[in-house]
Image 1 (tube, rainbow, N blue to C red):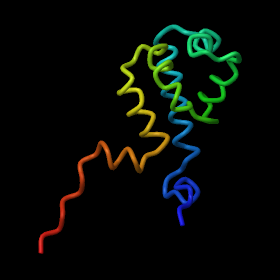
Image 2 (image 1 turned 180 degrees about the vertical axis):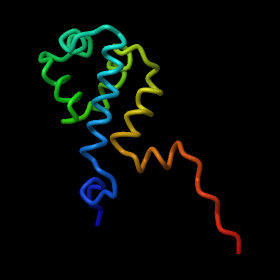
Image 3 (image 1 turned 135 degrees about the horizontal axis):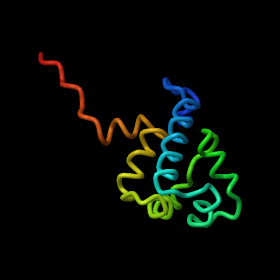
Image 4 (image 1 turned 90 degrees about the horizontal axis):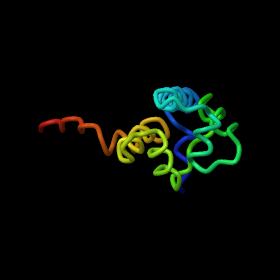
Length: 105
């Protein structure tokens, strides 16, 4: 039976979300955008969602990654790769980190 991986995660989901929030805030500020301006650019009606993300509560829906990458001035593949580091570190590790050497027999 499959269970949600974050429910039994060996990593701190809350801390990872807070780190993601700090990263998103750095990108936003580097572009000189207010939370309200970013919300408008990514199609949100309420800027409070930006505030929630930046404080580590919530995550960007995958169908909005492209809009966020464009608004933040970052390549979409780079943006998604970095989000995966925070949102799903196990998948990130499998996709982007070198595998451990196999033991020799």
